[in-house]
Image (cartoon, rainbow, N blue to C red):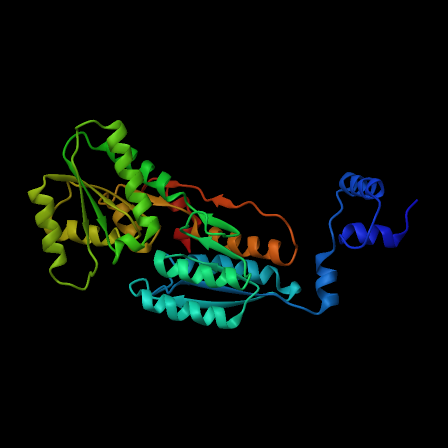
Length: 338
């Protein structure tokens, strides 16, 4: 028989306990599948955890970046009995300086954990260095920076997503050239788009022979009235038959196709935005690669909670599914119904 005090010392890893006694107690704990009462201990300590989120600001409830917030808020609501708070911070997808400003606000808060999208690689690396100096755990969402000291990553494998897109377009396009389009600024600083493009190109270099030539263009500003004409001219000059859009803005290509009558193009894009769905149902966009962003938000907060409050081990990478959505199955995705 051992005393309650001895069991307590083993459970909380404090004080000296004979190794044989420790092993015997740990064996019994394992056999009983014992789980600590984290709620009781949290209430007893009268402490709450404060988490910060740092995500791109969505222009509307129909935009991609609104969806992770829904998942985050859902999990926080479920954890209300633990006294968990979340402080949201946002930045502009087109302005790295806004990321710097918002990340500085996060650091001033000194949260217990951070969930953020490393949208701008250089600025994110600087932010990460400060988080590590302050011993603040962080989880990546949507995109990742490898070996950055993160607690984990919740999102697609961007490279693998690019491979899937390449295979799909290769299968539906027998001949003609392909144009990859980035609707983004500072492409070299947006790691997830770079990885998607790399996976896409690697598919064709390893599997497709000389059936297609691949080209890439960037559209940094869709308010520029000339961008459509420039892209249309590239399509005609390069004998483009297929288009791969690396992010959720494939609806811009849908608009271009309708404006110039280019319905022969085969198009792949990303994400279940309302306007993207409309073009999918018109057969102007043929595939949407989707990644369940609401689930990503939910899982990211849950990972931080399990680490900070429950003191549990969590796996480093939690890749989300790479869903291939077509007009025949889109109505069965709850993201669209919302």
